[in-house]
Image 1: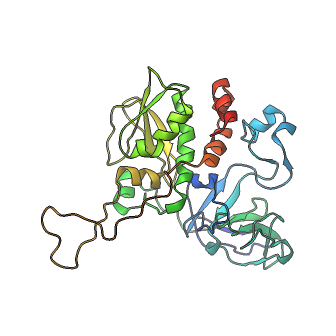
Image 2 (image 1 turned 180 degrees about the horizontal axis):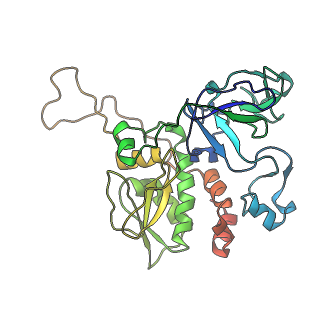
Image 3 (image 1 turned 135 degrees about the vertical axis):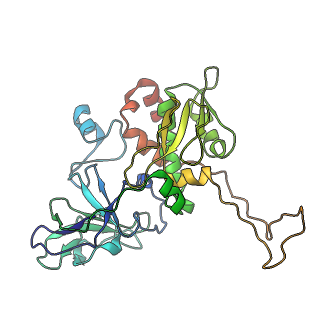
Length: 335
């Protein structure tokens, strides 16, 4: 567990929170849509990437310096701000006040574009930035140089995969935002394929990634088979296996058969591995034998589900493999 305090006066700024892996859906947002908190209450994550000004364009930075900043292809501006900002759910932060002159936003909240907008109530030191505008995950970013870790209760033990399955901790409800972790995983699949065709196992994996992989990778002989594997599910024979990311540690579930593990957000993995079975039954009695129906019928989506192209490119730009000529050509072509 951790408690964060103000570096200026030592005032307590947060509840006791447990560290978790940075969620992969941080890679994208939906424009002009109100978002839920990025993190669950009672947790925090550390962003290893720099954040905040000064900002520079990719072509203004030497390749070696860009690589040190975690960027291997052009994708938006490069931050020269501090690394290691602490991300929390807004409800876990207290002892601060909003700096009103830095509270601008696009339309429905604060977007953080004016710089740190939270100040310590005790000493007025700017300690972080709250974001809650439309098109932003709701989150507070504490500045690493402005906060210190204070004594806290013992850390809760890390759950093993069996416990995560039994308690339902792998499940979360990204609903309309599930295209974002799908786009992140798609980038990792393309990198793992190394330019070879990919044969997708029929079922949920094919429904999620089949159309996109057909558009991105060539067809032909020598295809690598892509399937799903993980705790409580099994390990089918395949060359590439989509496996869950541990939500606390960020570690991957490891296959034993020599297949290449491809990281997939644990919530999306659980949805594919154990799809919910929903029925509409009378309060008593039940339907006649052999009859199963939905009433009313479920609505058809307006268009086929597609992994987020923004999250796909965001992820590729941060993977060293994108410097390979075939992958850089694919990246520049767009998806």
